[in-house]
Amino acid sequence: MDITMNDEDDGYVIVSKPTWPSSPSIEPRPRLLDTICRISDHIAEAFWPVNLRIHDHPELGYEEFIAHEALTTFMSSQQGWKVTPSAYGLKTAWIAVYDTGRKGAVVSFNAEMGMGHACGHNLIASASVIGAVTAAKVMEEMEIPGKVVLLGTPAEEGIVADAARTSTTAYEQLKVEYHGRAAHAAVNPWLGINALDALISAYNSISLLRQQFMPGDIVQGHITDGGLKPNIIHAYASGSFVIRATTQSRLDELREKVYACFTAGATATGARLVVTRGGAYKDHIANEVLAQRYAPYFNALEPDFKILENADLDRARGVSPASSDQGDISHAMPSLSPWFYIHPGPKGQGPHNPEFADAARKKDAYNRAVRVGKGLVGVALDVLQSPDLLERVKRAWQESMKP
Image (cartoon, rainbow, N blue to C red; front, top):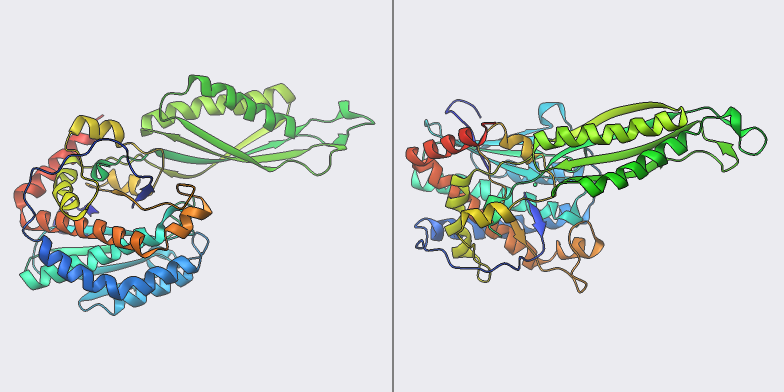
């Protein structure tokens, strides 16, 4: 959920169950929670088939046509919403806006799509859509001024516990190419320049560099083109690499070290290096004021796990090695991106595993996503009704943006 910074402008990561100690919230049950639950449960019943349709039809990033159709059709059926399909020049992006017509704050929900069923993207979309529609209906029922914006964002992973205080990593994708010179590997190999050797040298150098990695530094890669045949000195080789770090500044430092490994491979072999920077995400900076408002809603809704209200501990455990487009949003406006737990399969596998994809289809997982949506609605309504809270959210965001 995001909060815009003025009146005029218009996740989630699924993880294994935490093992840290828990304690109940000291706050009473939020006063609007019963109203939120009544409305949200009705919407969730109607949205369940949409959740299954998204899960049962995996689609590649930027090609989520079934998900786009299912979500925009559902939103078009909701009274008072203005829906724009294929928004911002992207065929599978979309935006839906509910505007009371009265001056107030703007809250935004991010419904991620993409072929991420093994990371629960159907659940992310469900929590966001149900949350946004619920917020609008409560606003109508209670005559709360303001605006709700729901963004349908494709290809979230293609280039989102004190579940509330989650911070994700900065992320950058690189295409690495080496150009050498072909030669016969047995007759005259001295005439060749082996591009594959350059790539493997760089790959191994990065593996050695890991000894000096800081906590939160991650570099992953794979060879996408390793040459044609074993009896040829390879004239071309390429790989895809991803760099992650806990902050954008650390990502910049780590990138220089990784680039040095790429350059070393070229220098050692004589191959020519070409590096193309692909998609990148900034680190997610969670707004602590929004996180504090989320805690009582989460604790009132979650029967088993309660958020331990300890800010220092939250910051220590709240950094995820995952990356999300929500990170970029958090650098533009106050943001909250909760995690939530779903029951894994027999082997206890986490995201990006077939077992987890099966778990993400179950009704229990859906119900947990709905609970997260309810919590986000509660935070959104608190902000919409409290100018003082909105100002504190803004100040906290401004403070977090300082170098």
